[in-house]
Image (cartoon, rainbow, N blue to C red; front, side, top):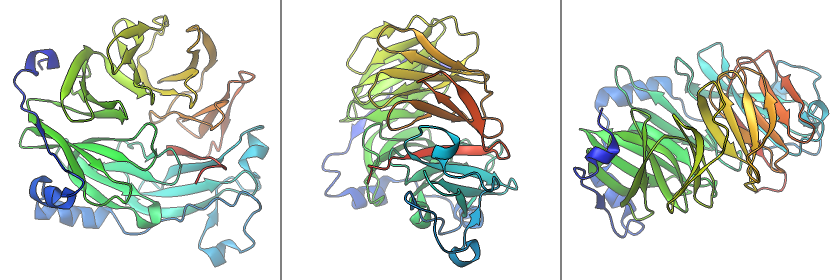
Length: 379
């Protein structure tokens, strides 16, 4: 497959002006239409409605599981998450597979037992990640369509979540505004880049072009990062939808100031959306890095391989902590205070305390496919 450096001159980029005023009209005109069989499939695998994302952080609910339609999580009498992970400051939202056929949303407040509710949306095989936004109250996931390389994007607050688009090959939550979602589609060989407003209505077309073979990997106030399908090159696109630059590598994560963590044959580097590359001096990692995540203050970068997690100080590029817990789906999240980093293990969740370097596995009777933090001070 050719690199983006060789095809950038061949692609045509079209920017749609005034997308806010005529967003719904634009969506109706250019948003890819799903074939009738696809919508029938969607109706079979994706139900309507799900859990209410409300954290009972002060005290457990007084109603019984039968009364409120919820069931305690499998680990009974486990207490609040702060009782299990000492010093943890947030509520935890987690998605697990139920009998391999559907999803369960687990709500684990600081005080009180974890509770779960069914999310009537099917699971993919192998299981795909369920991504929470920064508030921990919205989810996004893509379910693949049979015999295709695209899927159906499903997003929103679980009880009101809905189909956002079909023919989707990549999506990402905004790296600083938790209410905004973007995704890419492929229709007849043409890539489309779309943004969904906070109300999840009327996706707005940012740009489209022929010859760009890739998918959205990250975005923020700095623009968009499109990952090449061969995982060898990154295309940077401005907020206005114009191609700005290409660079070898694979996107691991982004930070709101415009820095992207990327991996290539030379190790892990920082790529600036404004230009410039900075090495991190951690090319001794033996395994391929699956994903990366910056702490909220930007002082630390967590990196995840199949067999371990590593926390790097951004001040001096030193390795601060490591966890030998084997990873499940590639996902990393930080606590709101930047002290803890969590990721799904093959079973359960690994919690790494960057304060004392301790790592522990919790809820090990389950297989998790998505994690989210609900900060107590958040909206």
